[in-house]
Length: 489
Image (tube, rainbow, N blue to C red; front, top):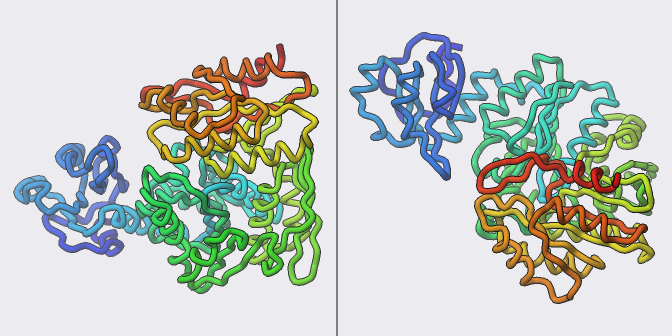
């Protein structure tokens, strides 16, 4: 696509310099990735500002630069370099607009389904992907664990990538024959306009509890960020919301979409009934328009009944045959690190990504429901560094009250002192049923070695992650691998 044509995609305040009739090679926001004929968008980040690297981008052959600050580079350099300078109000929105134009509006050619909420996004996305595949639709996925372009797996670093990466993924999905795509939509991505301009056929709201307050500052701001997704839906789309969450009405009050609800509430469009689960899976009933659907999933817990129902309601609302949906839920595989049960003997380990107070409480309640006070429950957990500190004592309290014993350890301390994080956790603990072992492998080993034969051990916080970040450096670490190592002793 020529630059002259691409400029029609962006809301520019002013264009100066030379707009050359050259084919644009790429849209980038990282100056290190600039190649000849790239358009470089100067994003203001939290650690650095892309405006500092404009000269680097020009030197590498950028055909145009996009800026918010008109004084960030002298006009004579633009003229001398024979490139274009595009002045915009918001570079993040401009990145999304340019990427949408460059990749020929890919989200508009897919049935795109977005999932947002504090907990359940990843599991719901994998269930929904499996339902669509079972119904015969080639489907892509964008999320926390990995991205999929059809059947090809692409490693994921962000829950929701930047807008140029997203539009490229969707373009590649279309090229590979995908008709549908499912994506997790994080609160960060909504505030930072990563999904700006995308066309969603449906959006799911799972729930909202306190999280990411290091970024959003208040719960109200966090709630507003989630609401952005639903405010942007068209009248042709569907908003599928958890009616049991007290914030669901606020989330969709300004949405133009058709509202579909799910939950145990009798007023829900899709009513969840008769939930029963053990270590082999979950059975429950979904009632819709006076018709009962019997559901089985190998995924465990009440929260997974909610996740499966959100996927059922969405697929059903998009016209997928109910029998295909039921089969799709039944055949959905275990999602890595999401209440994943390990151990072939009596001693069981459950690895779960529960890194918020609400998700930890729900995971432990599920464990308690399964063991019926017949088994010892031990929890191994920590909290992430450089993140929301308010949840640390709350998680300590929950772990202590719902476990027989807990071992407090490191999660991803990042740049924080691990023992300062542990001190914050201890502020919420009143019972004397804890020990401290900062080394995560030793903590897991102690939990397995020093517990009785019928123990159920919950290792919480990291889930699917195969690394531990300490002082800004990621080292290989997998809760699953470590647990299996000591279970085999």
